[in-house]
Image 1: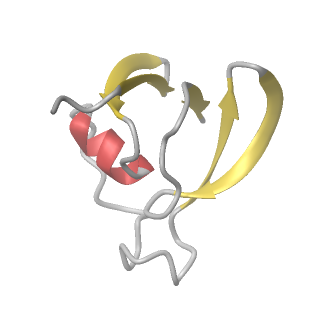
Image 2: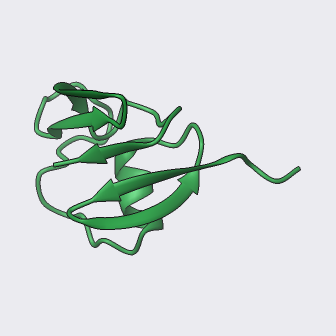
Length: 77
């Protein structure tokens, strides 16, 4: 079964990624070499904090790169 794809924007680049993957996996999927600032990869140390916005809400919300999973289109900053 083919996964449902969601369109996200990372640093101005729009990319379709499988729904339900974490932010850091989406960045790797998009070809962005993420090595620094991701810490323990378990979401415990807090080094991977970022902010995101959904297309329907202009407010920025906090998220952890290794824990938060995409369910809808959004923009990372």
